Image (cartoon, rainbow over all chains, first blue to last red; front, side):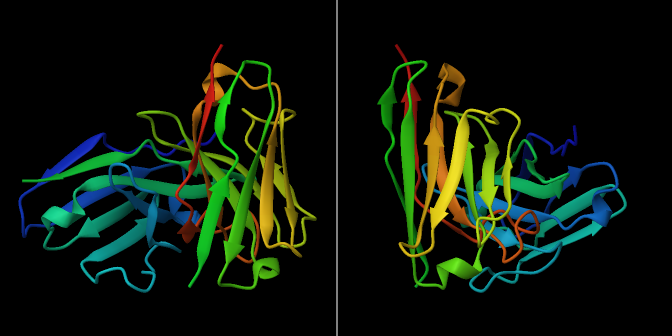
Length: 106
Length: 122
């Protein structure tokens, strides 16, 4: 089965840049999406098709995908960005989620 | 405004059945695939099932294949998840999400409902 691996946690100081990685075999050949989920809330799509931002998502969210790693970057992280982040891709007609990364901004 | 609203969750005994519904509005429902994603308490997201706009193509996670059935009614702008032979490990919040025009591609959901909790316990 296909797996996506994320670090369990990432910490960043306010105003600094946070990077969250998502690793999978030849992930760069698949479109990757990223979701943000805050406690008690539904997931929110923040990146689709590797690097596209839905309307309403701040420009400080960006992403890339190459080789075996997709990366979500939050430039100038704010306290409001503290959340769990999940990457997602498709493999053999199955949607795969990474295990999630808890981003702490402090 | 795009809205997705799940209903039908609740407590159920192991081996029992439950039918979840998802009502959508604010977009041309018949143009989009729809997905169910679940989240067990304190755990990550797990994709459950997807259905194409015309219902001609359906995918299931291995963990629910043979027990869950996804369907949709484009006339009612609704998608359903019939769950049978429920197990304790099916306990989760079940989210309905709008997918891409093409099923099995891209983001599993650009709009998500608030979720409905299914609790399987004796």
